[in-house]
Structure formats: C-alpha cells, structure tokens
Image (cartoon, rainbow, N blue to C red; front, side, top):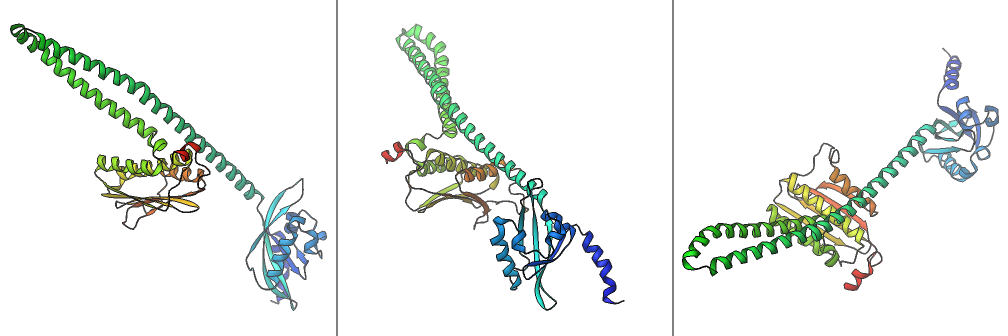
Length: 373
C-alpha cells in the first residue's frame, strides 16, 4: 500500500479527534482541525493562513510568541501554554502543546490542544473551598482560644476563689476544734478529745484535699491559658512547660535556644505555644520516648521551633496526617502565621515537628510587653 493510501483514514482520525490539532509554520496556521477552531471560538477558515499573533488573546500575545520562538528554535519542547478565551458567551481555557518538526524543508510546530475549562472550574472551586476551610479553621482556633481564656478565668477567679474560701473556713473549724479540746477539764477533756479528735482529723484531711484541688484547678487553668506568657514571654514559658512535662512523665527534656529572642505578638506566642503543647502531648501518648528536645532558633527574618524525640517516630506508610487532627491543627496554626509545619523523622529515629514562621522584630509585639523588656 502506498503512503497516499493512508491519507484518507488518517485525515478522518485527525478531523474527528476530540483533541485540537494544529500546524504552525512561519508564524501562521497551515492546518487546524475543527476541534481546535472550536476551542479558539473561531471558524476554521478564519484560522487557516492567519498569523498566530493576530488571533491570540491580546493579553497573552507577548508570552505566546516568546514560546513559539523558543519552540521553533528547538527549545521548550513539551512545554504547555494555557490559552484563555476572550468570548463572553463561552469563556474558558485550553492548553496547547507543540513539537518542532521539519515540514517541506522548513521548521514548523505540530501540536495538540486540550480544553481544560471544566478542570479550571473545578480547580477554582477547590481553591475556594480550601480558602473557606482555612477561614473556618482560623475562626475555630480563635473561638477556641477565647473559650479557653473564659474557662481559665472562671476556674482561676471563681472556682479557685470558692475553694480558697472553703479552705479558710475549714481552717477556722479546725482551729475551733483544737480550742475545744485544749480548753476542756481533764476528765471532760478526755471524753471530748475522744469525740472531737476524729472530727479534727477529718477536717485536716479536707483542708489537704482542698489544697490539692486548688493546685489541680490552677494547673488546668494554666494549661488552658498559660499566664506565664503574659509576664515571662514565650521562651521562659516553654522552659517551665518542659520542666513540668519531665516531672509528670519521667521523660528527660532539654531546651536549646539560638539567636537573640525578641518580643512577639500575643497571637504568635499563643499559636507557637499550642504547637509546643500538642507536640509534647503526642510524645507522652504515642512515642514511647525517653528523651525530648526543644530547639528555638531566632534569625533576622524567621523563627524556627523544633520538637524532636527518640521514640517510635511517625508512620512510614503515608498516613502521618490521616486522622491526626493534632498534626492538622499544628499545620494550620503555622499557616495562619504565614509559615509552614514539617513532620519528619529525627536523627534519633523519633518524631520531629518543626514550624518556621516569618519574623518581624518588635513590630507585631504589644507595646506593654516591649516596655517591660
């Protein structure tokens, strides 16, 4: 069969292709199929022989012609270009790909195009949904912090105050019972002592229990809203938190700091401290570690916080984030600060959490905090 015998079937395939097909030579369209013309929003006869620069989107002419020149010179092979239609009644986009060939002794571009209007719409919808989700998570974090602050204040001021009053009243009862026992005559005193001593012991136990409850309420209040942040700053608060963690769980904890610390905004300090809390919670719950290290690094333009342990580390099956809302929360808090969060394996084969955020010294910090420093 001669080569010309293939022309009819191949021409039919090209004409019926759902992909646009075109041939460019000397900057003009030498061939386009109906699909390509439809993607361009033009009739086929309007494209045949037309110059590329004359039918291109005016806003894209410069970039499109630059790519054409690169292709015709043998570069940018396989590089895609997205064409935006300017038709009001049928907006959308399509991608074009081209390859340099020699046609009748001259260089030419043979290419295909694919309509991506639906993909672009879905991408825009996904971006909008992602933006809404991020806004929702930011609002959720803000509401959660406000609620934590409210509950912390209620625990500290109301419940703590009530417990202190109970402890004071119990102390008065204990003092009164002691007086009754000591002021009695010897004979009556023995009778009263046998009756009042158990009561006095119970009162003293209640005083001790009340004191322990006060300390527990303070610990819960501190966990909800660390007051040390307002007075001592981020570094000292993290240091104190590590000491409490080591005492509670028996996991050796160390802290290192590099660079010159600076005042940070309240929102920044809270977000970093919440990441620190969540990372330590994961260490205590899941890592089976014996050591944990926290590194704070202050540079001129960024702050890095790294928490790493020598435990079991993260899973290697790609499910590190799946179902782990704590990790998602850390990632979102870093994003809200304009930074990023990384979850990797530490040199000690344990888990490593690292957040890096941009840093503007003294600008975002509250004036009162800077004045204190």
